[in-house]
Every structure is written in C-alpha cells, then in structure tokens.
Image 1 (cartoon, rainbow, N blue to C red):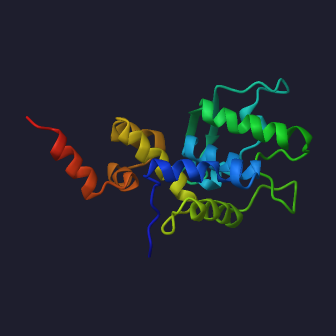
Image 2: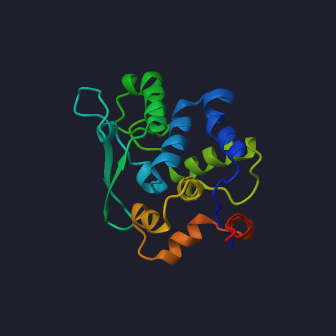
Length: 193
C-alpha cells in the first residue's frame, strides 16, 4: 500500500498551484487546489462546500471563517479564509459562481446541481502534480498534508497542527508532517550548542 506525501519542494508546489490558473485555465480546479492547500480540509468536506459557506447571506462579502462539521469525525471546524484562498474564490466567483444556479463551489461538470466527485478531484490533483514533476504518492490528501508540512517548516508547533487537523493522536499528526532524515539532519547541523 502506498502512502500519500506532502508537496515539500516550493518550486514544484508553485507550479502545481498555478497549473489550472496559467497553463490550463480551469478556475474551478484552480480554486479546488488552492482551497485544499489553504484550509487543510479533507476532500470529502472540501467538495461539499457551498457559496453560502463563504459568503455572508446575499451580500457577497466573505465570511471571516469557513465553518463545517467534518464528515469523518463529526467535529466542528472553523478555518480563517486567508488571502490566497480569497483570491481563488474571487476568480472562481467571477468566472462561474455568479452565473451558476449550483450552490456548490466545485460543481460536477455533467450534473450541474451536484458537487464534483472524489474520483474527478483525484484526477484534477494528479494532472497538476504530473505537470509539476510530482510523479508518485500525490493525491487529494496531499493538499491537507502539504498545509501541515509547510506550517511546521514555518515554525508552527505540531501540537497546534494536531488541534487544527482534529487528530486524536500526536502520532497521526507526526505521520502527516512527513519528517525525513533530511529534516532531522537539518536540526542537528543547525543547533550547535
């Protein structure tokens, strides 16, 4: 059984993020990837997001947070909408949201009143990953793991990441971070007492 990896290389991550914006413009797919990376929602929760989850009523002003009840855990989760997520939502809204009768942010291409399927989301992520030179172990769950890996590299404590992810154990969070020997070596080489 293979494991899913976070996208660690920043140049590849940038290329992955921009694929559906610059190389092959499909704004729904771009927004899916950007929101996945910036909210760390599981794909099952991400695909069920509706415009009412991000806008305040009919004002078309963004809420400060996207609040959901996770399908897997049944736990409430509230995630601040950062500027990258808001930019992707702006593009999506301008290109398709304001003309669509579908309540979902990521509608199915064939059945407009239903959300994108998990299998189609997987194909979207894999196509962008291949473009970015990421050939193995990348899936929809990589979006969630990538968030944690880069947060950890920027100094966010694993205990806080455990809380953000709604993980029940530190062991699971530690696996998400994808800590390798290279990361351990960096610590030993840079902490010189």
